Length: 220
Image (cartoon, rainbow, N blue to C red):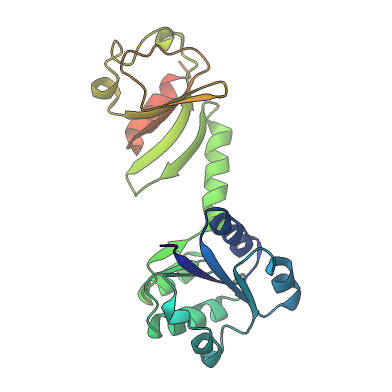
């Protein structure tokens, strides 16, 4: 069964989420009071509605409580974000993700019962900053405060032509290798006997300190 989503606010963040969800086959209602923004998405979203989400009656009329997941992607107006969050929670929405502008905003959203608070600008800044510092960590994703998935390029000669098994990879580096990217080919769940080559990228998962330690080894 398709999941259905409602996205409130069609700035760059909300619009990007809409396009991603639609591409994945989800049903998506988008809501914004700006007619021009709605016109941009009326042929993309399942349904696009011009409405003021701060109007509780409008949310009720749209059946907001019936959606599996509501994303509150309101931009700079923190007061509007808080008010809309409060209303959708009171209306009984099952799962709410909300965009936070700063840490204070995030704390308020959390106290209102938001299931997931996101900081898109801050998080993207952190990711870009880390990519600038590390030449070999191509990308990463924090799964929790202590667990990270990262794609790390093999540049240290001592790993070249060695298999994961011969490197005793899991026990020595405390990481699990999910995939190996070699040029345009990706090997999912690689065999322990697969030999690494310089320039390969390993997709690894493990504790942050272990991921960062392995990344540092590529600089030696």
